[in-house]
Image 1 (cartoon, rainbow, N blue to C red):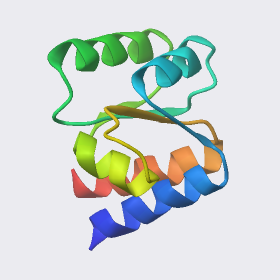
Image 2 (cartoon, helix red, strand yellow; image 1 turned 180 degrees about the vertical axis):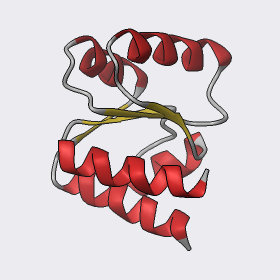
Image 3 (spheres, one colour; image 1 turned 135 degrees about the vertical axis):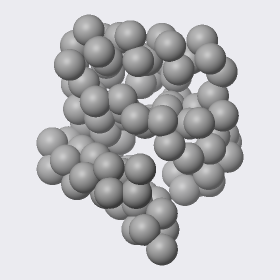
Length: 103
């Protein structure tokens, strides 16, 4: 139930164009400090997980492992996505709160 609400919030975030999907784009958002929350798929490679955890930790950006690549891509209407980053403060705060409640 709560997972569906999180996916709906992510879809709404994309519709508002406050989301960046894909490893390269998400990495650029983190490096430019545009990203306010990064979600890495649980089935992403260990290198990808480490890369984003390190880059986000250095810049004090929350980085959460959640979902699968297939689920993240499906909710965005795209191919599989290993990483997404939220670029809006209100969306980031709400999604982070929702994710912390289920973990």
